[in-house]
Structures are given as C-alpha cells and as structure tokens.
Length: 343
Ligand SMILES: *Cc1c(COP(=O)(O)O)cnc(C)c1O
Image 1 (cartoon, protein in one colour):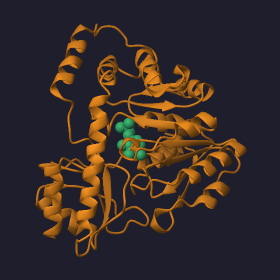
Image 2 (image 1 turned 120 degrees about the vertical axis):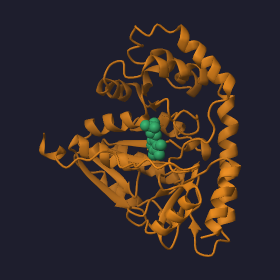
Image 3 (image 1 turned 90 degrees about the vertical axis):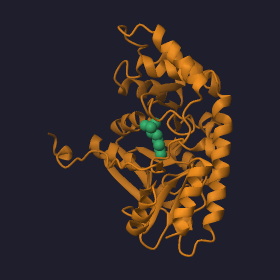
Image 4 (image 1 turned 45 degrees about the vertical axis):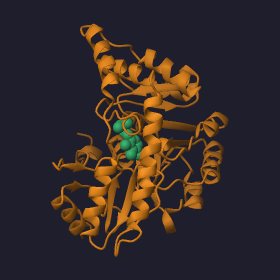
C-alpha cells in the first residue's frame, strides 16, 4: 500500500440497537406508502439486466429543472460523500474547520493530500481571517458545511461571501455542503451563480427521507462539474436509486412540509432543554442539536438505558462533554427530553 494508506481505518460508526434512534440525523419519517408503491411499480418495470444511465442523466435533468441550474452543472453520485472524495482527490490541499464533518478529513487522508483544519471560535464562529489566510499556495479546496456539522450553526451569509471572494482571488474552490439547508431555509445558489469558485453539495439522505437509497448531487459551474464527473466511476448511480429519485422528485411537496415540521420540533426541544440543570444545547439550524453535558459517556449511557440512542461528539476538539441528538418524531423527542431530565 502507499505509505499514506497504511494506518487508514474505516469510517468510525458502531451500530447500536435502540428503540429510539437519534444518532444519524436521518429523517424519522419513511416515505408515505403511496410514494413507495409508485417507486416499487417503477422498479418492477426496469430491465435489471441493463446498465443504468452513464451519468444519471435522467435524474440530472429533473434536478436541474427543480433547482433552476444548468444540466451540465449538476453531478449525481450515490451519496454526497462520493463527491467529497472526488473533490479531495482532485485537490492539491484541503482546508477545513474544526470540529467538522468527519469525512472531509477522511477523504483528504485517503487522497494523500495535505489537510489543515482551523478551530471555530467562541460560539462556534468561523475563524474568518484564518481561513482567508489559509487559502494560499498551492490552491486547494475549502470544505464548509453550512448549516455546520456537528455544531448546527448557520454562518452569516456575509462571511461565506468573504470566503468565496478570497477563493476566487486565490484560485481555490469553496465547497459549501448544504446537507441541512432545508432545515434552515438557507440557500447558497445565488452565491454559486455569481462566483464560479463556489460549488454546492446536496444530499437526499436527510430532509428527503432517503438515507438508505444513497444519493447526493453537486451544483457548480459546468467546467467544474464536468471535471468532478470525470473523477467518478461510470454508472455509479444504480438504476434502482435513479428510479426512486425520479418518483420522489416528482412529488417534492411531500418533503417541503416535513423539513419545516422537523425544524419546529428542533426549536421545541432546544427551548425545553433550556431548563435542564446541567445540559446546554447550542442553537441549531439543522435537524440535530449539539448538547453539552458534564460527562458525555455517562449521559450517552444514561440515555441508552432509557432506550434513546444519540451520538457522542466528545472526541472532537472543543466538544468536551458533547452529544449530538437528531430531531425525531414528537413522541421520540419527548422520550429524549424525559430521559434527559431524569439524568
Ligand atoms: C449527512 C451529511 C452528508 C450526507 O452524505 P451522503 O453521502 O449524501 O449520505 C453530507 N455532508 C454532511 C455535512 C452531512 O452531515
């Protein structure tokens, strides 16, 4: 193996069974049965012996129309993580925030590219001047999830614009990962339209209730999109994934209401936690809350003993004592709150 791969480990996720699963920021709602039936009917008519579209062209066309984006600027992948990996493989260096979504660093390490992460400031503020200075030579890729994972913070538009301006001055690419934008109402398409050094990542895994289906996409300038497309293997979006996406994309009203309802639940849980004796939640624009406790291990175990599975984040810099709690159904959120207040 190449030396940089010798100590590589698989993505750190341990599966734990629990009645209430709030550990992966999934949607608590599966597709409504009638949509699922429609997708199954479509799967039945597919010729399974044939390869799918080379670049998921039919889904790409629907996404482009729905997002008002040129088709040649859309890249579909079996999860936006594949797009993160492709971008990291192309990059000459990777810049990140810390803490951050673990796979930005994972993809950089896998790609053998130099990786640097700058600590967020007070209240998880962006280290703006550090990131601007960090975009030096050689030019590379800056990953920024906004809303941010795992803090839930939505960074001010003006700050993201400053980073985008710097990226275009220095030949960098600013990758705004909008995995959680449906829960914040934010949308960086206007910025990406104005500035050709900005690309956006979107996923079907969260607000679209399709974590198991594996799909995400990139929006960017056609010149960048065609290069990212060339970094992906051919036929990488399976025919069944494409068929399900086409059905769900034809009924977007189903997710629109869901994201708003989950955002309202997030705010309800956040306000309820304010009266907890020792736990403190950070304001969140996503479908999860980052909660600081006096002892993450004890809190995690205590919740699990009451049937609620959440994710520890206390291994990350600056997140001592922290847990990440996904927003579930109202009943699941009540169960979490009840368990939290019993600890
Ligand atoms: C969940 C998440 C994704 C989604 O990745 P997929 O491979 O599309 O499931 C991407 N970015 C961030 C920051 C996430 O939290």
